[in-house]
Amino acid sequence: MSPVQISKVSQVLPLYTNSHSNLSDTITLSLHDIIFLVLDPVRNLFLYPQTNLPFPQILQTLKSSLARTLPSFHPLAGKLTYVESSESLIIDCSPEAVGNGVTFLEAESDLDINLLAEEEVQDEAFFQLVPNITPVELPAPVCAIQVTKFSNGGVAVGIAINHGIMDGIGMWQFIDAWVQNCKSWDSPARSTAQHDRSIVKSDGDDEVIRGALKRLFPHLPKERESLIFFLFHAKKNLNIFFLQIKLPDTNKNLHLTRKTFSIDETSIQALQRKILSLDLKRVSNPSKFVSLLAHTWICLTRARATTSNEPMSATSSLFFAIDLSLTSIPPLMNPTQVTASAQARSGSLL
Image 1 (cartoon, rainbow, N blue to C red):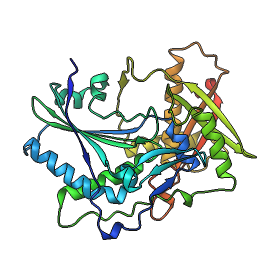
Image 2: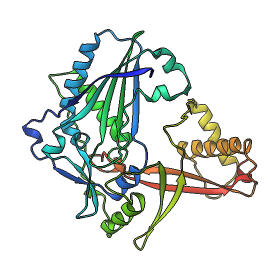
Image 3: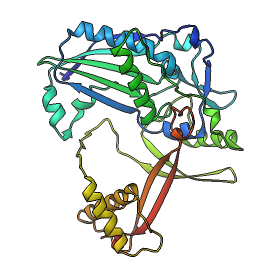
Image 4: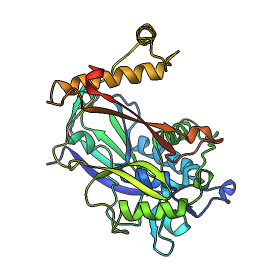
């Protein structure tokens, strides 16, 4: 028997007011969005070991505040939809699509919430506390919420959002607005969330998007059958180059290890001084980000060297995303990122 049992499934509808009359019924996904569609949903899990309110009251507060929050984040109530005539993917926010609202699951569990919060190695049970919204066929919902009551006390709130619809930064803005609405009924949160994808656009994007869809999702409106990560590598003369990596089935034998490393200001300054002592021509004043990233790269390369027979001459590559969404005013909610990379011989990093 599963340690987490779904007891009720309901829908939370956006509570629109006159100020939301100009919301768009259709949001066409950009190239940045489509690239992130191949990733698993963005998931957040909040554990509350001690709660003072009765569970029915917690559910009612969460549902009513969610209804007031959704109008500012109306794509979350929409459906990811493929439009065959234009060969494009859209978020359908029409009244018919939004009519079902956001799926809200109520669950019960006999797991120990305190152990869940403390454990660094999590098994499949941990992920049963967050709803699964990985689409199989379009149209498909893009967001779901799960609230779980534990038999020994405590409550968990799990949130899943399609990664192509909203990135981590966008999710936190949604969560912040939801929290504000939970705390105050009289003063609803005023969000400046920006959902217009056309703000970030370049010549030839439509043709590139059609090519990307055919490469990433050749069987639309059916979604991917297995998780394949395509890293967008370059765009030149409307040609798309992908690095394709086959990942294991995430539904089988999934074990993740979580570890938090705390690095204080003194340690960061020591890293910066060490970099400066190398007398590198291209680095005159390493930032905190550069110092920590370089240190992480070296540590990961050394760790890998202890478990593999990789030659010292092998190439070690570092990829990291640069988020552009916060450069717009108001900030964009969708994943608007470019990928930066660096390469070095493994031997030089050891």
